[in-house]
Image (tube, rainbow, N blue to C red; front, side, top):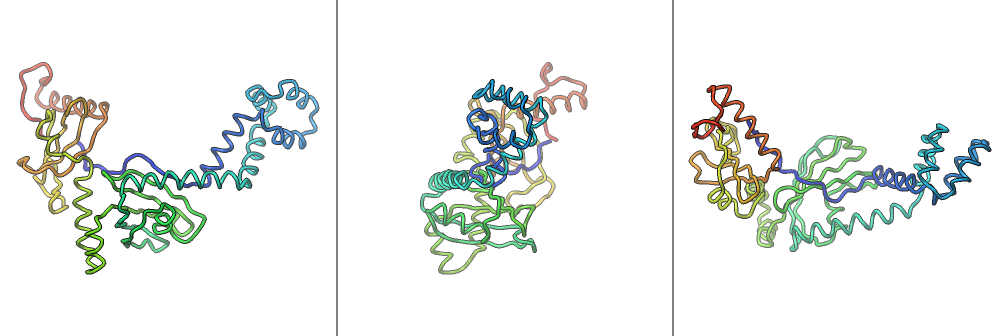
Length: 312
């Protein structure tokens, strides 16, 4: 049966030198007919006049040129030349940097217009430290500088996390496996209270509630008005954030034309978490449960009068 799910969502702004170079190599390779200097560099080392003649005959046709290079067994050498050329092209990195910070600016503007942030960090540096930062900024470059170490050689990947949060993975020479950062918007009032009291525990408790309730603004409506297709017992208590027997209920809910995983209290009075599911995952969950019931009771719940909640 379903387990407690991560709230990490789709990938957002990314800075990765290797990705930038590989994307440029793929672009240059696809358009090799427009890059005579790369072909010249490849052919200069070959002294193969027959090969030179073949490429001259299809000059400007990228696909035919690539086919000839592949037949000559020189594709790897061409990619090496392209990789070295792209690595030394500062214009590529300048354009990629502009695109990255423009996108990151859009993200933080949308998620946190006030610009007050609480960021929790885990596995930081070679000693795998944990920590936090509370700050205010509406500038993407400043945000980036606040959440990354002082090094130019790093990889930054950001993801949706809950409704307005960000999960950020930062890799560098002191943390090759990646530091984990969780960035959450906080209110101006929460920021001012923290500045006065330094009470980070209160901020953390607020964020933990935010993480639990992160995925839909009107969770109670989805559970109240939706069709519960399936429910099962979970062993996770969302109020104490601990595992225990009879802790909560998991529900598969159809609301409109969308499927949701909904975690509720045992009696259904409180809704703790809602996550949208794909139709494919929901159908797979239902099929797996039907198979379990059929094996257990010897009946097909879709073809019988079996009409009880299915509880694991």
